[in-house]
Length: 154
Image 1 (cartoon, rainbow, N blue to C red):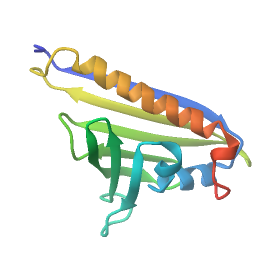
Image 2: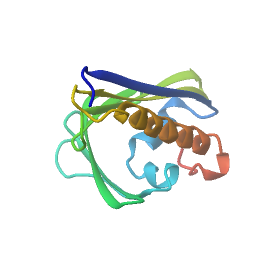
Image 3: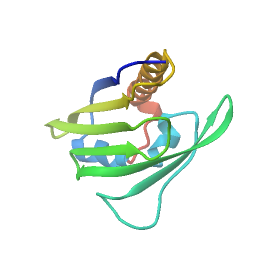
Image 4: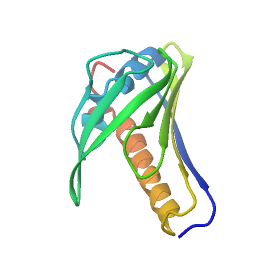
C-alpha cells in the first residue's frame, strides 16, 4: 500500500492536416471513439445538458468483460478545449482535449490524461495507470495519423 498521494499525468501532441474546427468537432463527438479505440463498443451523450455538465457514456470491452465509463464535462471552449472527469473508477481521473489552429488546414491536437491517487492504494497502481494512459494515447495518435481511418467528416 502507498503511504502518500501520487499524481499521474501523461499527454500526447500531434499535428494534423485538418482545420482546428473539423478536428475538434470530430474529437468531441463521443462516436469518434468507435473509430479511434478498438475496445469501444458504443458511445453517446446522455440526455440533458450540453457543454459544461454534459455526461458522455461509453461501453468498452476489456479482458475481464464489458465496463461502463462516464465522463462529466467540467470546462468547454467550443472548438478549442474541453476538460472532463471520470465519474467511475478507483480514483479521480481527468482528461483534457486542446486543439490549436496552425493555419486554415492545419492544427495541433493535445490530449492529456491525469489522476490523483490517494494514499493507501495498492503499490504499483500508479505504474498501471500510467501505462494505461500511455497505451490509450499511443492508440489515439496512431489512429489520427492514418488518413484512411479518419472519417471524411473530419
